[in-house]
Amino acid sequence: MLETKLQELKTRLAEINDLHAANGVLTWDQTIYMPPDGAAARGRQIATLAHIAHEKFIDPAVGHLLDDLRPHEESLPYDSADASLIRIARHDYERAIRVPPQFMAQIFAHTAESYEVWSRARPDNDFAAVQPYLEKTVELSRELANFSPGYDHIADPLIDMSDYGMKAADVRTLFAELRKQQVPIVRAIVAQEAADDSCLHQFYPEDKQLSFGAEVIKRFGYDFRRGRQDKSPHPYMINFSISDVRITTRVKERNLGEGLFSSLHEAGHALYEQGVRRDFEGLPLASGTSAGVHESQSRLWENQIGRSKGFWQHFYPKLQAVFPEQLGNVSVETFYRAINKVQRSLIRTDADEVTYNLHVMMRFDFELDLLEGRLAVRDLPEVWRERFKTDMGIAPPDDRDGVLQDVHWYSGIIGGAFQGYTLGNILSAQIFDAALRVHPNLPDEIAQGEFSTLRTWLIDNIHQYGRMFTAPELIERATGSPMHIGPYINYLYTKYGELYTL
Ligand code: ZN
Image 1 (cartoon, rainbow, N blue to C red):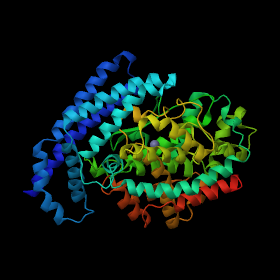
Image 2: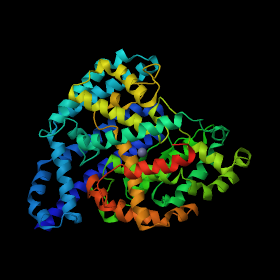
Image 3: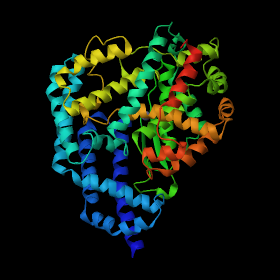
Image 4: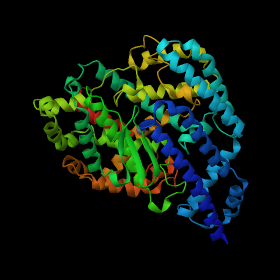
């Protein structure tokens, strides 16, 4: 009897998953192949499929199945696949039925309009134009949070949507400590002579860049029989099943780092999705568990590996062979310094790995302040400049490169949009550190272009579980301790202490 109910639940969830996957293909096609005038119809098609998927999911029959299966779930160990499936499906279901569809429609309509206004306001440096929209967004975000009463902090229900298991207080504690440690590192580095990265800004033909990047991610273990790489204006990873995990990259012929490191980054996301247990196919468990853990995987392959000295010991001669005219006379030391150049930048997406977190943490703090009502939207440009000056020692000359720079607040809700990036950096070091304790020879293998030990460790300890565990549960199991910044700070001091005087 219970077996039949469990099977029925799985069948229903798999159908809903198929609809989401089909929508994914439509979205992917929209950024890769779709002619520009197809946008209006495509938007409608995506909305229709999403609506059908949502209706099927909030069907009370799903709720009844979950209720009936509760005794079965409780009879199983917490970490069994079936118990996890029922638990995660219930979490998703309860969240989905809490918010009335009309309210979600109101959010979508408002954010679509807000995005339109922002896309003109940013080039015009016109914060006043978006201010009323952002005020409304803050209001709607608060209302959305209030559909999940009983929180400690109003941002908790919003953070829960991307980083399930994390609360504002947890993130705040980690970030406060990190900021205290990281600001002095940035100060020390930017006071010294900047690295010369002119070698990266020669002419690098696109096709050669793409094939070199593809070779590297193949070595990482990205399976091209279960994935592919295309070009898009903004790089991303998207999966339609465990056996179809695609990535996109963006190539600039005058910037070698752009395409290469976006490929390594997105491949890190993709390795996570390709590493999920195959028997989770079609179920809600078949996906990375949180934005923070996902970003830990992309940052691990992009930075911990891809910007490391050992990695380039092996790959630099190969890169030189592809670009003999550009790099034949550039030493590996010069190249290594160039790809790890640290500088104060106004724009988050252009920031290097040392300054990046400062960009993220200020946004996170502002989100909490806005939601708490301690900060008014009209004061945002000014507090942005002040905070930037405190943390980076410079202030943006205008709002275009200040408060208007990111699309997030103008195309979605406030709260929970940014913290995953910095959690990812913190966790990338904690996870690599744990792998290193088990396999102290990892650096030697990496210096030989060999990644299978690391990849296997990641599959066994992180990837295979999909969404079975929340991020805090998973990190504790994989690394033996709760999330903490120690390994990340060590990583920064070790690596940048060699490049600069710290
Ligand atoms: Zn990412």
